[in-house]
Image (cartoon, rainbow, N blue to C red; front, side, top):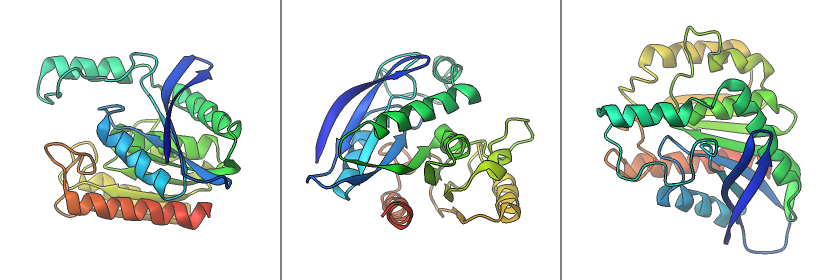
Length: 245
């Protein structure tokens, strides 16, 4: 497995990030890993490298490239702190739905251009607020995204006109949603409504709650749940193996 720092020209600037390649010369399927609000750091790089050892080319873009390069936080964020909330706003404000869709197209075009990538169909996974980005990629790039996953994704079903669940009619990909318990960004009522929307959509999906796992459980940190994080990785690789092999 190899790790390479890369840059990608987008319509809005230059996105930095990392590209991971599995060992060997064979053409490999490719996936995009979208970070949570903490951005690119040791945990997200380790996750991407682990996927590469499973035989995938993995693109880990800095989704906050319009605002900053990693690290996006100089010290661990305090979620009850005003300065942290201000920083959240700085990071997410440029990521309007149309900007997210432009980024998705640019990232897939980049993978298309890479030697050793089996182009044509891709997978994507988002964590925290980028769970909705994974859905937006799947909708806007429905010819290329064949699998999309979200772990502890927030705001996937809301009353707003840009709610991600409204994208479902445009999505052809197989979907997977792994939810946290007692998650203010995706409470039980919203999970239930998302499940109803998925059933009406009629595509292939799983939508489940990880018992005992709180928002952010997949990443090392104060709420990390090792057993459920491992289960999430297994579900992710099953999704990719089924759709991309």
